[in-house]
Image 1 (cartoon, protein in one colour):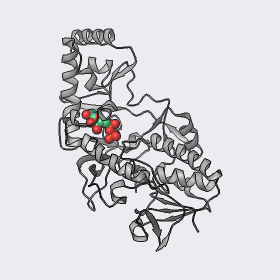
Image 2 (tube, rainbow, N blue to C red):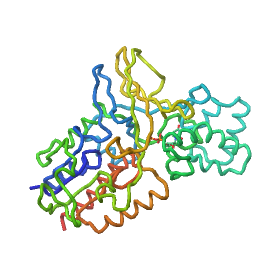
Image 3 (cartoon, rainbow, N blue to C red):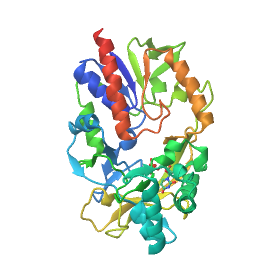
Image 4 (cartoon, protein in one colour):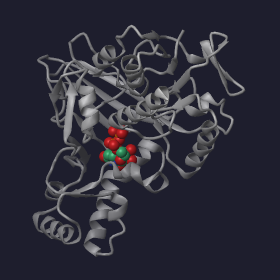
Length: 384
Ligand code: UDP
């Protein structure tokens, strides 16, 4: 009955379903554990008409025109440039740490000197990861690197990952580099915007096709299983291709051990004030147990005498208790993942796609790009 079985209705699964249904005219069944589509991008309007991101703030940004054009088929956009402040020593300063931040945190003479040193050593408008800057031999740059490391990275990373910046993959802290420029935005990508009617609408439009059947509220393990490298659906061997976007370790029954993920306890509060903070997100590296506060009205402005904020409390992922948001990038976990990947390589009918299935810290645009490329490969195979 179905040519493709897709597990998970987040971006990875939904883009694949949309492409397969519309471009290959093949039948797809998507199985989704939650009661809604959209994965962690799911959003909704609350009783005050404030658009809430149920699984934490999702800011769309990309420099990939192909991804932008693809997604633009399903939504209009609200121009939005994410700005973030970090609460440091009782003041809110610009993040990523850039040349403007120098003047916010240091007396003018010191800031001038440090700016000159930075510009003598790095190109203007470039990004320097904090762990790179820490390797500087110049004493002033060493001082600056140590300051930024202590005030912005060390404690935030310890809260977020339960580890020091050195214990996780360098690419993680490099996501928020020191910026040798004056661009105050959190991202520098060419395209930055939020979907006008929210992310959920994008998924609704993607999946609204007669070739796509959607089974919500269903853990795939209730209706499907993998035995001796064969996939069974409702008790019968499934001969089509399976696109799996869940946790790779779960799919293979944890045979090489559990992969570690970080989770979040998300605490939402509705407040009787029009505005809570000046920008959408304020990070608290050194204070409190939460990492950051996001105020949703700052992303989708709306007139209301109430506002909703979200505090994120990182915690370990525990099966059955919370959600695996982030793969934890230590060498140990990466080599465990490699064993799963090798094992999966022999199963040619199963395609693993997305943050959980590929154990990668993908952004939304990365996942869409991966899905589009994977689809192109599939459709070539389909034509052969
Ligand atoms: N980070 C930090 N301090 C900050 C912001 C980020 O130490 O104020 C580090 C931290 O390790 C974090 C990583 O940079 O996990 C990536 O941050 P990003 O804002 O990209 O995280 P996300 O929004 O994906 O949770």
